[in-house]
Image (cartoon, rainbow, N blue to C red):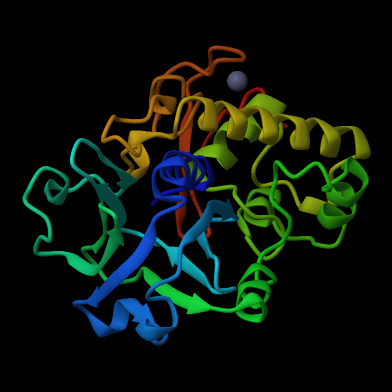
Length: 281
Ligand SMILES: [Zn+2]
């Protein structure tokens, strides 16, 4: 599943390529994948491509926005004369002719270029909305973990508000956005905090350490353009590099980067938690 660094990478790659192009045609091949009236965006020019939480937003010059959520298996691929740029779930669709078997929406631009939205399992979506819809969608999420407006004090209060396990809280996008399983496991290891601690048991100092660690691993993910392990391919089809520097995620039995004890895998909230029983307290 693409996480914040992956979606951020797609936005950064698509923005310079798609901005300034006019949307000429939108072909919806699967109704479930697209919400809104196509006629509302035809003829509008792209102003900017950006990201908030895991939402990719294309701003148009007629006040509308085209929102995309890739969910589990979504993929965005922009094809132009020379370029083939995009990102998402790394399926064979990337290499095959487009539109392919899993292409759900095709956006044609003027003077050139086509954006394909592929989604094997059809959990992802594209949606047209005005500012009100955009705000509504964005308000479903807590602040981005890397947003400087999320202060250490706010983060501490957020942890104090729940007795649930700290890992489940940082994974909850209603509380804080942009922390997926890989980055949650890695940041808790970096901060030497047990994923199973009740969130409200963390001291102010531990909370600060965790916030710092979270930002460190997520920013590292962005710098390395995401992790391939999370079913992700960067905008130009190159695999993300974060998987090479992962600390604990998927590394059961391997030595902990802090203390050398073997990393264990424990089920938590239906997902795998990788951690070190020795140094994560
Ligand atoms: Zn350890």
